[in-house]
Image 1 (cartoon, rainbow, N blue to C red):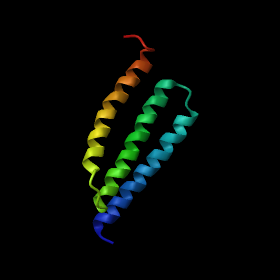
Image 2 (image 1 turned 90 degrees about the vertical axis):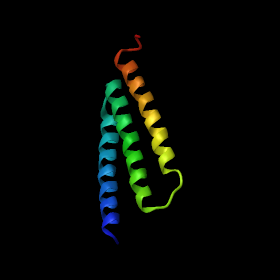
Image 3 (image 1 turned 120 degrees about the vertical axis):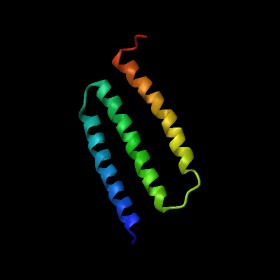
Length: 89
C-alpha cells in the first residue's frame, strides 16, 4: 500500500464521517434552510468521496462528474436563496 493510497483512504474516511454527521443533522433539523444547506453538504461529501476514489482507480469520467457537480452546485445555491426568501423575488 502506497502513501497516496493511505492518504486517499484517510480522506474518504473523513468525508464519510462528515457525511454521516450531516445526514443525522438533516434528519433532526426542522428548519428548511438548514435542511437545504445540509443537503448541499451531503452532495459535496459524496462528490469528494468519488473524486478521491478516482485518484487510485482508473475511470474516464472523473472530470466530467466534477464539472457537472459544479453546475449543480450553482443551482443548489439558488434554491437555498429561494427557500430563505420564502419564494419572494
